Image (cartoon, rainbow, N blue to C red; front, side):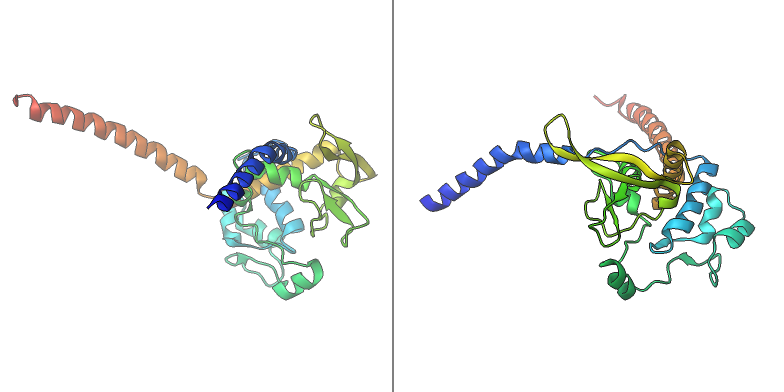
Length: 251
């Protein structure tokens, strides 16, 4: 019993001593605020980027191409510009790459992105903030098998799919205000086809689409919620006066 109490005390002491350090380490990861938009044109641009740069490896198996009409795409545009050879507009947004091939090429199968914007949410930041910072945080690293690394996801197995848009940037060690070592991105040594501001805007559109895809009926749900609240308020008022009417002659 005495030994057990001593061990318990040691564990509690370790938690008290190291919790501040762990909290500082967790806070060292800075996530930029994602400018998420619900504008149909921005969502359409994001969907186009998703098909061109993400859907080669990442599937979105909970989404059908036909659902893209909800953000303003015409059916003909989807068929002519977004479908791969052999796909139909009613098909799910899947990839031809098998899981075994993905594990052989990348070390692990790329995750499905249907709910990625919700899966990456935390108590301190939204999934959109994570994705927005992550997609802009790739830098050249010759020590990695793919030649790329990321400031948000260290030693990531994913290459920089949009390097031709952003250009090639590098990273150097730096320290933040708490003395923690971080990586500071250095502006592109090789320019991309977009300026830095245009690339940030393109990533914001892509992230906006990922947020929409994770819950395409969010606006409908919120509208229904407003009507439900109005109904409950009206029902409460009705039952309140009905109750007073029933009990007014009872003493």
